[in-house]
Image (cartoon, rainbow, N blue to C red; front, side, top):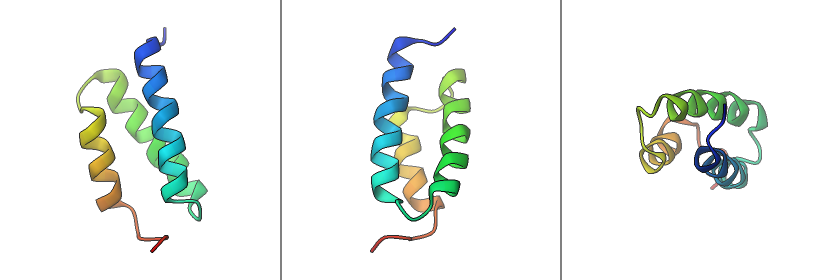
Length: 62
């Protein structure tokens, strides 16, 4: 069962993430699934993951 709050965050994250990394759709999909896994387990906050993503992923847009 999907929480509406989490679902709304997943949509916001997906849009923001893809705008930042438009040239890495495959990578973004993989990391999105990775982030979604943590979100469902409520281990990491949305803001923290968003911040970490920009550090982990290679710079495709400058």
